[in-house]
Length: 612
Image (cartoon, rainbow, N blue to C red; front, side):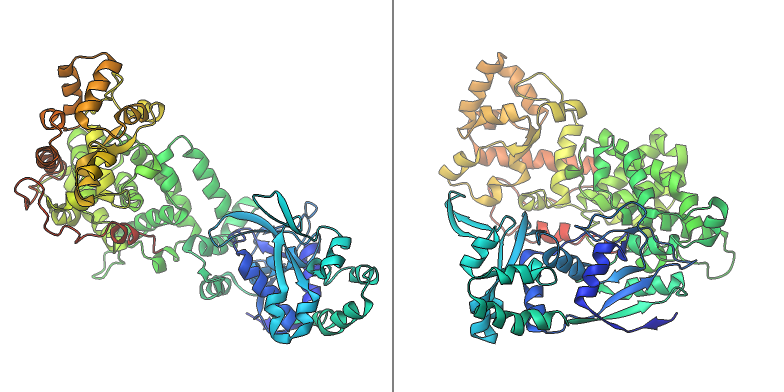
């Protein structure tokens, strides 16, 4: 690998990005910088402070043939050839290209992530008054250059035209490397603009940014190493992006097909094949690669007859060792296995990506399906797979160290599912549930919260207003969601604390129409209302309540204490059936107040983030 470290003027970079001589590899993540970060970058340029180097890869490399795409905000004629690909510095050069060229309008977002368009100006008088006030002088205005208040009714400042800019003393930064002479010539205060030109515009024209330029002989392994080490805007590239760089230069594939392999395009095709399975919207490209990695390393593990065969792995370093041939070998089986996994979850009454307890648990589930093949659908095998699945969800075992658990599952679950005399998988053995956990399951942040809601549906829950079972079709048609049984307002007025009011014990899965009917009144009142509206006798409604494990007698008596104790016990039994082992009871009766905050829902769920 050879490289140079030239210095180029910012004006040259802007010219190259606009002409397409500098483009991005197509797999680079999108433009993400916020308004304030862009404004501070412009302050850096005006002050003449360094902003760090950019990294470029010279095109024409026989091993590394990335598909280029234009810097965001730049329109290029089809087929425009790049001279260099931008490996590091995308966010900076995109910001500068949009802010300092063309109309100067930047597509960005505010600190809360709200998308917006901004245009940047400098208050010349403020900037000239004191060098320390340059930060204060750089203004971010709406894309049309007009600052409004009172919900857009009143104009506070109008810099949309040269006349308005002259009046307000605001220099538009998109002219910094453009036709600023005409703009300055028309300004009434020639002394002001002349001084601004000498102190800011003139120095900016010689503002240099160092470059690290990798030559056309750089091999694909070196480029991948560069990608892995370089931190772009604080966001390191993930394994998918790194493998994209490796696969793109696969010489054998090119020799066979006459074209380069585009992992991005292949992933989009995978997503299209899954478009009819909403659950798979939660599957990330790195999840797919982890499933492929486990199967590829498992094959090598089984084929090795030495004393130390290679380990089965889904870890980042081993995913990065995948070859394109590995990927192509397992791609179709894994695609189909994820579809099968989505169907299995549908059968368990999990219908949307939002309701999947642990999206990452789909990775070993798909890999296990590939290993088992069609045997995964045999009655006994499927029952054990379902027990394994609920053990992971209700035991909350996919909240950390997931790659290790992935491997343990693919090693043990297939054989155990086929033969119960085989060792019990760790996920099944480790699963446990305590009664008190029901008190702290209060939001969708917890996998077990979503799991119990699905179990209620799975046992045949029916709507209270309409005679319909809450299956996949009705789930969508009736706008089904998780709602309170004893309404929040009623609980607050009657002194029920948040621990019990918000617990999954006081919630169930009902339709939007039923939830509106419930309102905020006592259960005795809304049940009477449901009977009249739905035109059903009380016993029939009690039967419908029973499908949700709701004790009708306690509910009709507005007896929260009795209701809570009875339903808590019913949910414990529901969990026991799912995981195949007893739930530890630690609440005897009524509204116990011992501490059940030992689990933090956000902590449990947050720890399951993909580490690949």
